View 1 (cartoon, rainbow, N blue to C red):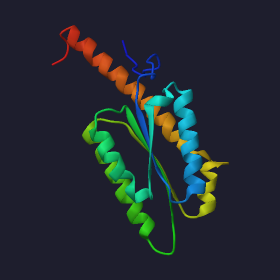
View 2 (view 1 turned 135 degrees about the horizontal axis):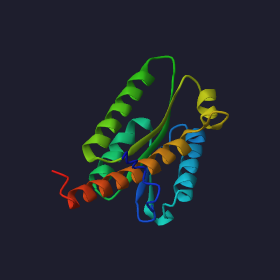
View 3 (view 1 turned 180 degrees about the vertical axis):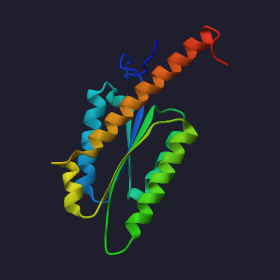
Length: 169
């Protein structure tokens, strides 16, 4: 029989989540942050279990996420920012470095790290993705983090049950 592990029955009341927010482009990142926080609260994370860390820009997101991940105190980290293309290719280098470092950390610490970093060609695209017609990527990142927390809870519970029956290694 196929088993589906989705973790929907797990409570998130005791989970601690960090939201790391870049302050650069505040008219965009504040909207991302607000939506992420609303999503976490609606998803069952207690307000006193959410920590918000503000950093100067998107480049600093991994630097703040690193000690948070290493602390072992969090169920997930959500990184929010906006990198908007300018006249040079700096955005490509920033986006690649930020993405790779957050992905590496997620694997290294076995921790969901949701990336809600907008990578847009212009301000209008960023506005549309931070509460406009394209939705809010802060909300989407928080929803992904909640799902991954529950999935990890379900996987760990499943692994314990397999060990309890002598089925694990």
